[in-house]
Length: 418
Image (cartoon, rainbow, N blue to C red):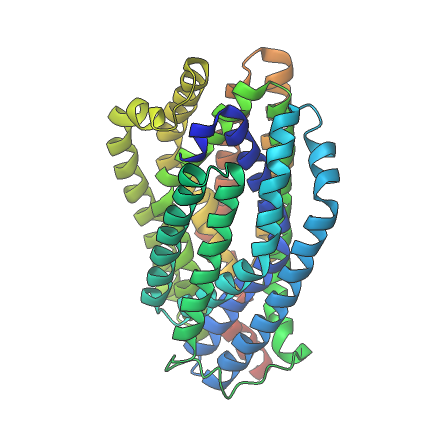
C-alpha cells in the first residue's frame, strides 16, 4: 500500500519482482520444507538426536543455497526482467531492477529465517515464529515508511525495509533456537551427511519442484498480464496482494499441517492421522469462509487504500469478488490436503497433479481466455480459480482412499519387520 502511493509503475515493479522471487526462492525453501517434515517425524518417533542433526545440517544447506540463489539473481536479474517482461514500460523495469537487487541481498537472511521457522514449527513451538514475524513486519513497516516518505527513496526504500525486516527476523529466531529445549543445536553435527539429508531431500525436492513449477507458471501468467498494459499489471498486483491477506488463515493452517501431520506420520497413528487431515481441511474452509464474509462488504473500501486509478480499482474489485466466492470452497482441498500428503511422504503424486493442473489449466486455459475471449485480466483469474478445482478433486480422492498410508515411516518399518 505504501508503494502504491508512488504510482502504478511502482506497484507493477514490486509485483514483477515478487513473482520472480517466488520462483527463485524454491531452491532453498524446498530444503526448509523437507527439514520441517523430517524433524517433526523424528520428534514424533522420539528421536531427538536425529532431529537436532537434521536441523543443523539443514541450516547449513539452506544458507549455501540461498546465498547462491541471491548471487545468481543479482548477476542475471536484468536479463530475466527483460526476457519475461520486455513489454513493460521502461520505468517499471528500472524500478523492478532496483527492488530485485534488494531482494537478492536479503536471500541468505530469508533462507535462514525460513529454515529457523520450519525447525520451530516442527516441534510445535509457534510462539518464537510469531514473535519473529510480528517484529520483522513492524521493522519492515517502520523502515519502509521512513525510506519511502521521509527520505524519498521510492522503490529502493521498500527494498531497504525488506532487507532490514529479514535481518531482524532471522536474528530473533537464531536467539530462540540457541535456547530450544527440544532441538539441541549447540551439540548437533553441522557437517552435511547423506544419511541425514537424504530423507529431507526426498520430501523437499519434489515439494520444491512442485513449488518451482507452480510459481514458474505464475511468472509466465504474469508475463501474459504484462502484455495487457500497466493498468492490468497494477490491478493484478493489488488483487494478488489483497488475496494473500484474505488467505492468511489458509496459509496458517497449511503451515500447521506440515508439523502436525508429520508428527502423526512419525508416530504411526493412522486413525488420528486420517482424522487430523480432514479436520485441518474443514478448519481452513470455515476460517476462509468467515474471512470472505467479513471482507465482502468492505472490499471496495480496502482496495481504495492502494490509491488505484478508477480503471485499476474496477478490475481489482471484480477479481476480488471472484476470489472471495471461490477461496473458501475450493482452496482448502487444493492446498491443505497436498500439504498433509507431503508430510506423510506421498510427494510424487502431489507433484504430478500440481504440475499438470498448473500448466494445463492455470497457464494454458488462462492464455486461451485472455487471447480468444476478450475477458482480459479476468480470464487469468477465472483460470486461476478453476485450477483450484482441478487439483483439489484428485487430492480429495487420494485422501478419501487413504493411498498415502503406504508411504508412512511406520508402514515401512512394519514391512521390514515382516
